[in-house]
Length: 77
Image (tube, rainbow, N blue to C red; front, side, top):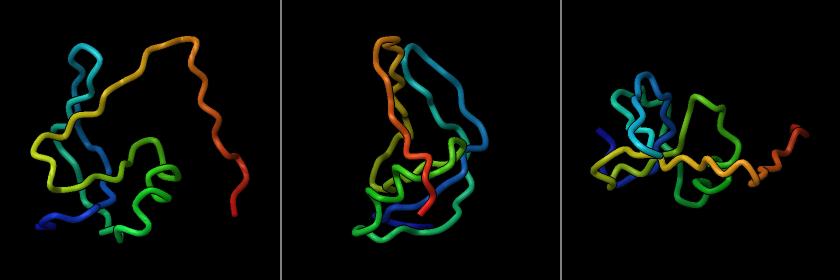
């Protein structure tokens, strides 16, 4: 449906194996331009993700390092 493009998708169904989230079902929301893909990647809601359709498998590698902290921007622009 969206060959070789960045797409914003909603994750509907997934399962976990080892330290990976294997995505089984998604619902496309919209296409994202190559220029905006990185910006959109960091501002999506937790149940959504920016994905490039050239990837054959939809796998998200999970980080379980308790010492790693992620700083999120709480200010809406």
